[in-house]
View 1 (tube, rainbow, N blue to C red):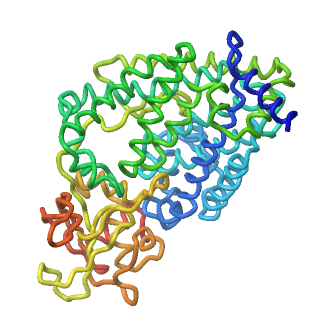
View 2 (spheres, helix red, strand yellow; view 1 turned 30 degrees about the horizontal axis):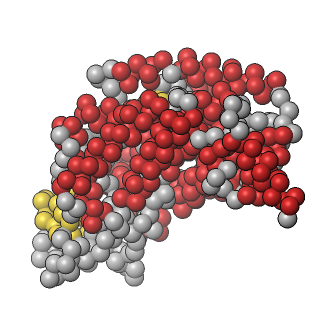
View 3 (spheres, rainbow, N blue to C red; view 1 turned 180 degrees about the vertical axis):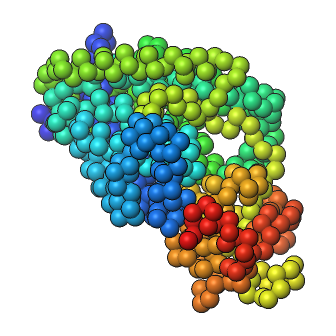
Length: 517
């Protein structure tokens, strides 16, 4: 017992001794484990959804997309240079699923505590392969954010040593690059809000956000009806986390730790308030670089802290690893020029990449907040006359609200890609989301892949005669209302008029797009 207590004391002395430079062994351990979890979830989403979305008979088949890119750029080789992806070589349904499963298994290895540069690089490239051919389904800011975060993580590890605490210390330049990443993410998000929408500037954005966000969570309705002053305080906390804290991530320990805490707490608050995929979990990853081992030694199990202390005491300097870290830093600095200028520009754009590998990107979220919630609901009927008197049955989404007496479940960090795209589509027209006609066709044929994107099939025995899409306005019902409703809604218009499997216009359009033969 005395020996164990002495070891605990030594660990504390290494990580907390005044005047000694901070160490990041525990920081690296935590960053890699959380990143592994996020990768595992992202690949699991692909396992469950990638074939009905971009498979050979998907809503946006990858084969058609790659041919279009090749034609536009002149050759498949030029397409690969512009959009690097494994699927230029092999893109069958088997290839998509095999890649997703390999990525998932390798991510679980990282979660279990084992990682090196080669393993993380393989995971990074496998996921980037999906992002670059995923089209609408992978056009979100967190996809390129995961690419950038995963790229930096490669150089946080030794080349071959997979142990949780190898003999090579985390290179300090890479820790700084993680801080630069969280600085850009938060500042980009804060400035796009400040510049983009008056209701952010006047503090009223949260009067609407919880109701109109893509997929509300279990707490969203409760948050929506909080007193207005509390919602305004929430906006002020947003400014603290996005416009003030980022400036302190490079400061000495105390200021840096406080900045990291504000950012992490802010992301946890967003996680609890809705279902924004793995965005906020991913944003926590670079924020963890604000904390050194003196912070983690107070939170993590003593056994883990002792292992980190032992590794720090036996550490050996790797000149090739350190040189590589500085080379990567130089590359990131050069690639950061355009994103940094974008942050300063009055014409700031968000969630864009300036290089084919998505190494350094621009970020931002909710630059404007909608004042109303619009939902497109697909409905089918077996009746011969598809008018308003017909018995229309809705296709229930897995996340988006449909039933008025049910709230949204907790889904994040998992992502329902169809639900997300339909949130965007509801603010536009079907002509800007042409794949919705392909979805109608598949529902008219009870296509298993398309039907499985919904919570259930209202026509399990036989496909419906007609499918239509209706645009509704949804609002939260006040808690405790007599009808026990969670939502109120009002029909706005018919988003897609009733279509049948024999409709010549639909058939001609789908053939022209190459979606049916």
